[in-house]
Image (cartoon, rainbow, N blue to C red; front, side):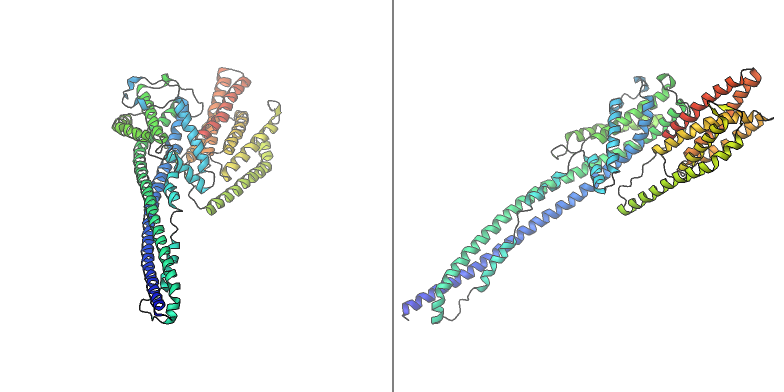
Length: 549
């Protein structure tokens, strides 16, 4: 082989080997660059996810606080507000500083709609939907911004390709390899592969640099989202603390107001209330409670987020204005609490939230509750069919009539209704449902019919006054027994109302006896008059008190 050719081959081999070594170094730089880009991206992603979790927790906490207030103190206020919404409160009650917060009928309507919407969402049975409704209630906006940074950068870093290209350098030939005639023959191949490896390594380095720049851009976007998450979390905690302070005062006032309204309208015959029914001090209680309701509604109703996912200016203004008036609210509430309204405050019922319970437990409770409800109807029907006729025969006068029915038929219907409805309420779990209200209506009808039979039976006794007093005492004891167990026994309210109606029997009978035996009015007229009054007391009284309970 000619010497020039050998020399040229050796030179080509040296250049090719140098190209492979250069490509190896460049690929290693590209690999380090790609790893740095991946580390930058992962660090920013982890930090954002931590901020997201904090934001979600604070929004859920605020949402549940709002939901609990709507279900307890606000629900109690709206029940009382329906009965006093036409009461005019003058400016002389001394709450000018907080009067601008006073809620009106439109605001009360909006609150009812809000309660209905979120109650139906939370009770839908889907934990995810319930949590979403709670977060929406807290933020009044969207959390789509939280993942926007991740979505923008999620497909940027495809870094695995760089390392594969770097493997080419592993086959580079060392400079000290023997330069034999065979090496001279292979020199052109080494030269061209070296050049190719060098070009590919430069391409890998450029790709890695591009990926690092994209990772930096994605990291900056995620930092912006992280900052926004922090701001939302801080604002949520501020609103949560403000709501807790407001609701502490609000719940005290709503309890007092509910007691005053109940006292004014009466427990049985509900009186339509006007401004003349309230004293100046009671009007001040109404005014302070309305103002607090307006402040609570403003905080609940104010969105923390704008439609674009940013912190809303409205939330800052509402927070500052309400926070500024907290001392005025506190002073007004302290003044109201010093007044003796001669009523016992009614504690707002707190609704237990079951949305966080495991699905299996909720399903089990649902199945057991359904079985118990069906059993309640079956047992009530069987007991009523078994004993109604016998009881009716034992208490009835065969010669009397009740409207177009004879006494036995009317009393059998009344006893059947009383046994069936009382058993259904006793065995089943229907507190606060339409079933309980229907049972209350049926029991009211039966108590009205049985009052007529009670009068006809007691008037035949020699000592009917003593018997009436005895009946009054026994029914009063039973009424008080169930009244004191309303909070622990779900059927206690129903039975306390039944025994209240029964103790009123003795009072109505004494009125009937007084006017018929001592004044000289017709016995039929007195019986019909007191029976009509007893109808309104038993039927509308029971259904109205059940609804209130």
